[in-house]
Length: 201
Image (cartoon, rainbow, N blue to C red):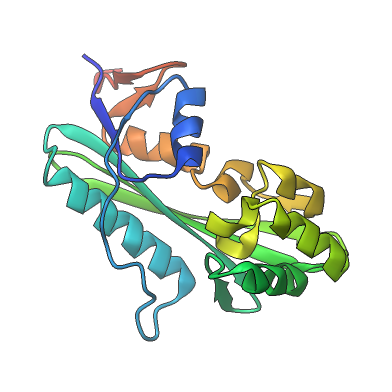
């Protein structure tokens, strides 16, 4: 029997990527404090949050495989979260214009016996644009619930000049890392589902 999958996130983007793979998880958002700890590096921050979210939800569904993730945008060592308002969204976009930034995605999969996690780093270069372009994009409403104030899978694609790394990591769920974590827990992706890995083969 395939495992029961639970997504510890309210993100429609993470859910959509899983459905694209033919996986249809239950959605149970995790309630954890997402603030950066003093002295915490961005990479460890997203890994920690992914682990905490997976562990929190696993408490209520101990028979499931729980998938959790967290993503931040980092520019020159500074973490850019979700914008608090329209002005902050415009300011974030202008700070990214014409530059390369990093997208860090922490991912965790927790099961009955153990949990595993991974970190994915992807570089994104924005094309050069002016404040009017930034304001017009912000006026669409798309950036307001996204780290770094843009969505590469939507209208924000028009701001991007190039990507080096895992595109899906930018959207919020790095597929390659996810499949590797499944395998560490004894499950192999089989184009629409998961099957147990035969240890004798």
